[in-house]
Image 1 (spheres, rainbow, N blue to C red):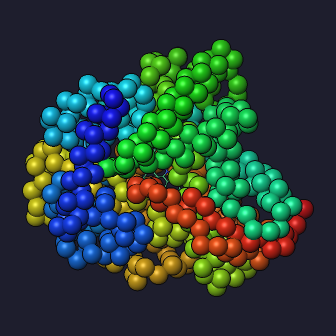
Image 2 (image 1 turned 30 degrees about the vertical axis):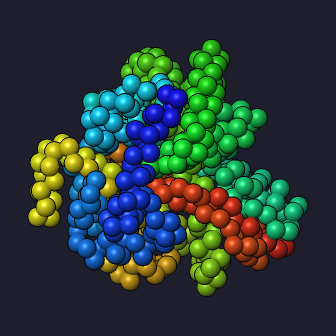
Length: 435
Ligand code: HEM
């Protein structure tokens, strides 16, 4: 009953309002309630662009303008929004009183939902062990893992769901190693992740909410035990180092540590799986690019940036104005929220010539905002890029004849964008390069 009341206050009202608003053409209402928007976000962001740099909707503003998005992400006048905190006061009252006390990726003390000085403490702690050197050292591990997963696939030769067998396995194995997750726990982690993925969305259904709740609950219990175990029995993984650094320096409470570790773990596989799936699909649709990449493998890093730009695994984020602020001639009042549509900014023709074209040689592809910007810039960007490059290159080197084996299904999420299943007919496997 308590859960139902919470869902109603947090999502149910927004869901019903959005449907109504969508029927009246309100862009944010459509973004939440119209399946056509999820099916073709690029067409929707073009519509938004034609409405101006800042679009006022009934509940919030939206921008798809690259310059404004970039400035907003770096501005101290705009802050991150905790899930539910932008609701009207009576709903907020209900939300506060029905708090189940579980960690949530966009509720404090998650790094994504707090600002300095709290944010600086958490971020400093993770960056102190998640250094450029540590990530560079992981590249070989990414290669070994990709090889092992593809060896396994080579025995199958038929049609496989590449998301299940490869795109989800690679990131969860790597982040699992980093965080000292035992091999046997990985399938459960993936399951919690799949259940919790829509937790970033607004206006989810009661059915989705219950599933998210179960996923988050399972994840909480598992992670709590895992941290306790690592504290008793530290390994040489980064999570043990984070715990040690917290004990010796920043002194995070158990809840803060749980939220920080949980975010790194979940962000580590919930997003990169989409980069790999989106990339495989986009490249299979453009064999001419695969031909270029086969003879010029040094193009892979740019190709990955272009995939991130055109099919962004994280489509949007949001901020709230900390004070009345002028944005491109519009005054955004203190407390008003704005959706920063990263995927829309990534197709801004003022920055990217012929923005809908998939061009693996695009010189400024890396100017995309898919990893956000400013103080919340993705902490795992270097690792995600390494997984994208190594993961995609190795797949196409091993299976040069791979082709689509069915239509595939998109994930039923709005903030995260990727494939939940993608059937691929592998064809004959080549022996690994260098062996
Ligand atoms: C393609 C893969 C990825 C994408 C597209 C992505 C995207 C993002 C975005 C857009 C944000 C910021 C959201 C905001 O500004 O509100 C973010 C933050 C974050 N990401 Fe990633 N991410 C990816 C992979 C990873 C990986 C592999 C890790 C961990 C190893 C990770 C860890 C984090 C963390 C900890 C934050 C919070 C940073 C902060 O708030 O200061 N991400 N990511």
